[in-house]
Length: 261
Length: 293
Image (cartoon, helix red, strand yellow):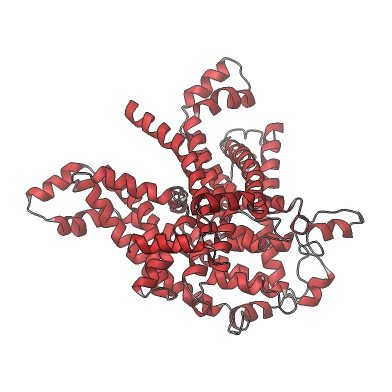
């Protein structure tokens, strides 16, 4: 494909003397983009923390030589097989204010109980978070469990001889040893967060209003609905930039690790 | 039986164990709840749904919603239900899974056994490509497909799925073929076998488990795709996920929650069956595929 055609198309959609600068100024001046970024930040930070905590805790519990380990693992992991569309639609139904969680609690007699994240612009992103964690935490649990299994049994014996409690052993000895596993999990979760799109489409379609917009949705809407390629590409370049920022430390760590041994 | 035999059983219900099993059971509820809600809702009639809540079990079990979701639910002007989306998805799935795995396995084999100058650089670029967010490539691909005359048809979507599956699958196959002892390859070379002969007669039969992993990864990935489906096909040819979203989130008409949940469950059924049938191989597959763009 001829490069010039592409540049020409880019230029026709852009306005002003300096098309590039103009597009980015417009992007960062748009309240919709700012909402998208702030949503992604809230979702991203909460999802990172919660997924890591839940993933590690479940893995640690499963690693305590319990019975039915396989059953529990299957239960925690099965949502990961489902698509974001299916996940989003189920949780949309569970969070339905009339028939879902809120309706059930109200029918128990607590009439003023209010939990309708999908209809409340202030907390809508946390309604999406509930579904996102349901879908993705099983994978992290699996990765953490593999990491825990890789830890030498002698470590446990040594800490027991030293009289260190189980919880403290996990916090002080095991977690620092599992640094590479945590880095891998972090990259996986972060990559998943940036591409967050299907889940929002299914659960809220970006609403109510524009309150649950995310960057990937901004890109899609401007490119394919508004036919505004300049804004679409400006936004997607921002997404690429954030992936690069996440990847550089990861690649650096991997490279350092491999050159050492 | 004359009294207890064997060693004295250990006490199972220590305080620690109760805590562990209690937590695991409670967390399991959170994970199982949506599956339960999907099943019970899809078996209720609409009047029953309006009177009760999402968690109440069905009083009168009806399979009407399933029939309607499969054969009569409407999207736009088409009223032939999810079956259309299902067959579209199948028609997308089979060629793209076959093609991507065929290309990627040969790629992986060539990159581990037939190293050429710059093959490492080539491989690293390929892997980096897997990390780039799809959003940045969506529109350029539209132009490419349009120039090739494939835009809007199933073959265009198949091509896109094939290309985007290749980096991660190549990685998977390369890692596997690198782990096979090199002597095997050298012995075959000494015996006069060429590129394709070694691939088909030695490497491919040895890599069967990794082929299964690749199939699991691709089938679930492509079946669950939404973004590519909605962009590169037209309404008649939408895959199942896109059609499901259109059925459930359509603004027109009365909301039929039971039909919606039956449709949702139907769409989730294929990956769920694969998940429960494949067991541990599934974990290997997703761990490999989780980094995708």
